[in-house]
Length: 115
Image 1 (cartoon, rainbow, N blue to C red):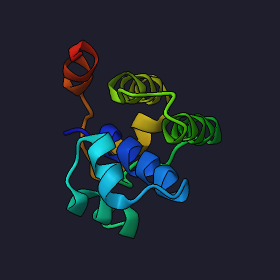
Image 2 (image 1 turned 180 degrees about the vertical axis):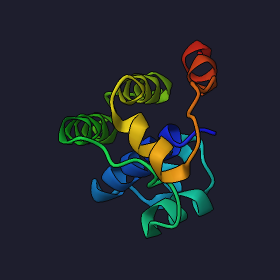
Image 3 (image 1 turned 180 degrees about the horizontal axis):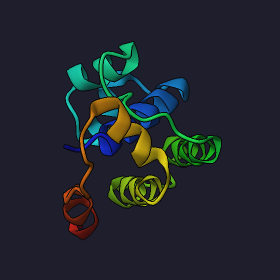
């Protein structure tokens, strides 16, 4: 199961809404439904992973760039952050919390190869 990508999306959605972007627009940017963004904002989903401060800072920087129109395609941003988290102890936390072995997802392959 993939727990990292939803957590990255949830945190990025929060940062984008904090930049005064509507939830509907955030859904468009992230390729999600408005309902999914609403659930991220309410904490009902997407918070399986607690990120280290440097990851949170990086997501905040990316959100600022998205808000300013400096980033048009979100796929590589998601891939970069997911891969960074994948290579950290954060995975141990997910495996402990959900009593499962986390395997690398193939979402990044699809996102990063999409143009």
